[in-house]
Length: 272
Image (cartoon, rainbow, N blue to C red; front, side, top):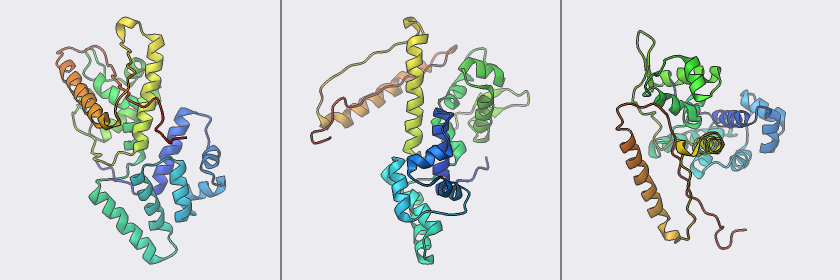
C-alpha cells in the first residue's frame, strides 16, 4: 500500500464537490462556487493551483462547508501555509499543520480514502465476501448491491489498494480484517455523508422490503441533558453486543445494516 497522505486544502474542496455531485449529478463547479459565495473563475483557479485564498476567505469557506473546529483550523492553516503573504507566515502555518497531525492524529484524507469511509457500499462489499455463494465478480457484486458496475469496480480497486480486500491467484476476493488507518482524523463531513446515505437506504428499505425482513422502531422520550453521554455509551454497548452475537453465524446469506439515531426533537432554551 503506497498511498501518500495528502495535506492540501484543495482535497477538502474537491471531496466536498464530489459528495455534492454524487447527491445531485446536475451539481456543477459553478453551483459550488455560488454556495461558497466565491466567483466561479476564482474557485476554478484555486483548484488548479493558479491562485489561492486569504486567511479571511479560508475562514468564510470553512464556515460555509460546516467544518468542525479542528477541520476549520487545519483548512485555514493549509491555505496559509501556501498563500500567506510572508515567508514567516507560511512557515508558521506549516508548523501548526505538523503539530496538529502529531497531537491530534489528524491526517487529512485523500479522496480515495474519503470515499471508502463516506460511501456505504465499500463496507457492504467487505461484508458480502463472507456471504455463502459469494462471487468475486464485479458484475455479480454490482447486481447484488444495486450499485452501478463502474462504481463497483472502482470500489473494489480502492479496497484492494488499501489492503482491506485481498485477491489470490485465482482472482478470489476476501476481506482481510485490516483496519483502515484513519485514527481521529476521520473528517466529520465523511461521517455525515455516510449517515446520510444509509438513512436514504433505510427510507427505501421501508418501502421495498416486507416487514418480516426488516425492523423499524422508534421511541420518543424526555431525558436530562446530563444523561446524553450515558445514552451514547448504552447505544455503543448495544451495537457491539449486537454485532458480536450475529457474527457468530457459521453461514451468512445476507448483508444487513443496523443504524441507530439518537437526536433532539426540540431546540435548547434560547435557540432560535
